[in-house]
Length: 261
Ligand SMILES: Cc1cc2nc3c(=O)[nH]c(=O)nc-3n(C[C@H](O)[C@H](O)[C@H](O)COP(=O)(O)OP(=O)(O)OC[C@H]3O[C@@H](n4cnc5c(N)ncnc54)[C@H](O)[C@@H]3O)c2cc1C
Image (tube, rainbow, N blue to C red; front, side, top):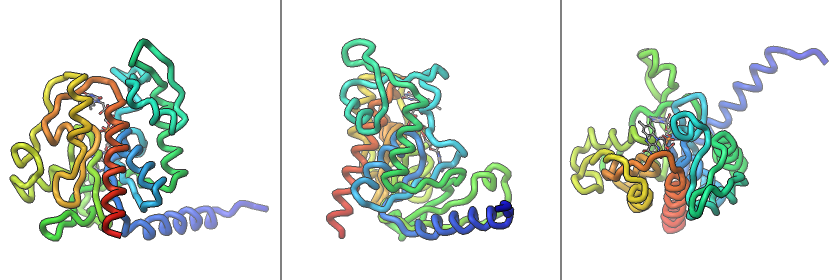
């Protein structure tokens, strides 16, 4: 049978349209497809919650592809090994409590498992603002990343969400919106974004877990965004905290969603 270009185009348009309209209302909208966002999406979807993830870049994986200084090996401490195992990511012992895995295999496995669990991922979509009512975050304002990059004057669309997770890494792009529009209202020591401190790997891994929480009604933070928001130190290229933070935010949200249903 001869292939028809119009059928190919129609298939892409209809399937994408279906995916987008089905996710205009969701339990949890995650922003950022780095390790913490992907892990959060996986555990939420596994628990039967509706979750959609929005990533600015064309590629998924955030800062995990490049390991440390583009050496594409990641280091993970023993506490996070159960997560590597859950996702089928192979690892090798380097010495007691230090394990390594291939960064490419890690991103590919996190992405594949999250999608198969039921997470929907929208790449090349930038979250530029939030829906607020007015003291609670109620959803996202989204636009194509090329619109943002080229500075085109194009209005965005919106996604309604029970909860939003800022997993945008150091940028804390989503928390910044609340900080700018409702100064002094964040659940941090100053009421604002405290900003990331200098490197201290051991301290930072513990802090990341403590800082993974709701920082404004309806808005949670995970991964490096959690540390940057609360003022924790950076940890260098060790990824256990990112994975565990994604798992923790998912567990907290599953409990919240179960309470409200
Ligand atoms: C300056 C810098 C310093 C770093 N320092 C450390 C460090 O100290 N320790 C460490 O472990 N790692 C560090 N990294 C590497 C990396 O950020 C982390 O290791 C890890 O990848 C963070 O995971 P994450 O899940 O928090 O977010 P990331 O992997 O950073 O992923 C965040 C994702 O969010 C997306 N995003 C951002 N804003 C938006 C938006 N508005 N809309 C949609 N998507 C958005 C980004 O494109 C990205 O893909 C650093 C990276 C940079 C750039």
